[in-house]
Image (cartoon, rainbow, N blue to C red):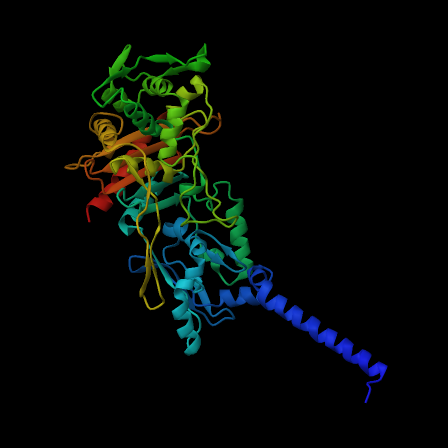
Length: 498
């Protein structure tokens, strides 16, 4: 029997509809599934993720971010037991995909989507339990973290600054604090009107509490950069810690004339024409380090800075809301002329560094010249606390030879024993340190106070960088040693006295 034309037309039309339906279903479920799942407008996915029992962020055995049960639509509320102390580390997990810090960088683990947790997800699927996230254990030393936060916030007035402490031999971040800090619980709340109000207030705050100054702010490092200049000068083979170096009360930068190109030492004793290298570091002699930088040359200075981590990205354990990391890159300028090179030798011109970067410089010298890649995540665990992965320390570079590192260390020990870094001295322990006061370049912005140190000097367990952007301190009293040294001392003591 032959099918009549109307029936055949309808059959072909229905077949075409089924084919279109099949193609569309295949496209949506296979090709476009990932894009739709990642789309912030997909409320079903957002609600499901927000309702999941997210893993904990741990410092030792103590959670600094944890999901607790609730009676509302979303089942679990993200909670931060010590919010302001750890906000710069944990970040926050808020509705709609607003995630920062470790919450963002380790989101796959904490949400349970990480491939290393596949077996756990399968067990959860076959059992009665809903999907659970894995835990993330941090490298943070809780005593060092608290010491850093308490010391920084004890400065007078409205304090803006950061402290970073590293374990030189591994790159573990032992402390990372910022002030002003914020309370991530107010952003993570299920009261979305209150959530938005809190975020808007923090985002509009001129003191920028949401800014992670340890890794998102690069400022002129001032005289703490003299560690790099000293390393370059000693690596050139012309000097060691016992050498005489070019000094003087003033130094006219090459190719310049007048006040704009004149470097001075603000009255510190830096010799007539030459001075002992130890004395130059003890007194933080600008004339010495500007001349050393010019002698070494722009290319060698750039190579030395980059060997410590400048002009590159090497840290991914903290993330912001925009892009992959939204972290600041510490920069050392390229293609400088001689006067610019001289200024760079004292941490000015266009040299910029984050507190984490300057902690790495100190840690590299403390670790016999080897710079280790900094990391914050020590271990990934399943929801049952079984170890899934442990971070292995990774060498970033050989910044200087062990011999050069020992010579620079001698200079820094002398600076603590007899120079401007004496506020960081610890009884019975040899400490290496350096002060820094960097000009902001703006008349209405005060200088930045810096301090870097490590201890014990001959076998360092901790390296510290302190950056004080501003506090209620008279402009002419701003000094890295006076204000940053005691902070570094307390952090080092917290690590060493355990």
